[in-house]
Length: 288
Ligand code: AMP
Ligand code: MG
Image 1: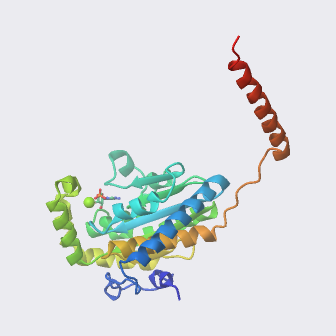
Image 2: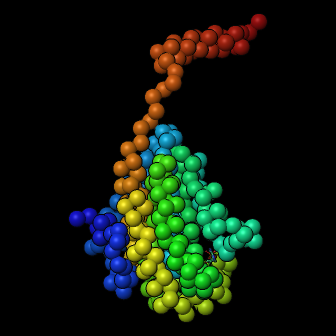
Image 3: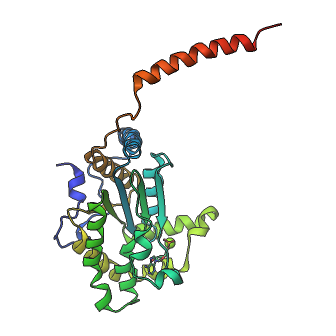
């Protein structure tokens, strides 16, 4: 069985995060052969995204979730680094603006979902509305608890109009998070990434764990599956996410559209253009 399958949250399965080892690397090591594998994924991803764009009929939505320091930014860099910026977008979800908060929670999300031929990555997503919102009691339980079903329905709507959805929960340990906070603190170029809330949110680790467990259990569906990615090792996180995105895009079986022009006719036009270019060249270089 491919290690990828072991990372999938099976629909209807009750998730216990304590059972998922954030140090898991599926027997891979951070060595040359892993680097070679990733380079292959990168090349394949580039091709597949080109096909998606050329075909213009389907789209891919990737949702990234995880606690502060889990590596959402690094994952985006890795996956999109393989793709052509034309046809890809990243959308980050922050505390809702006044206008966003005045609407239903999916309003700001729906309008930035990927159009046909494109890939969109969500850095955080509509899932914040059953995570941070639940942990901080931003709305009553009677409200957030209905959202799982609403999310499943929303995602079903996207899927039925040609969007593939992949959701990744980047799983790190509290120790690894603290290590990453220390690295940020040591590097002035990364100070902008630090926020006070990193430390207060960290105190709520058990509450977030519970919220994530419910979220993953209730919203991993056949049409929009969650993968829990062991993310203490950044290289393994990149390897696994890259592989899952690649396999999924392969399954999408994109077809490069047939040309809308008559290639034989264009070949004749090309030959004529070459002949007249030669003539033009001779005329331009004529010394009178
Ligand atoms: P960052 O991703 O570090 O830039 O931080 C964005 C912040 O916005 C995080 O603390 C999120 O929890 C918060 N956030 C995102 N979506 C929501 C939401 N729907 N309600 C409240 N806070 C949110
Ligand atoms: Mg942050």
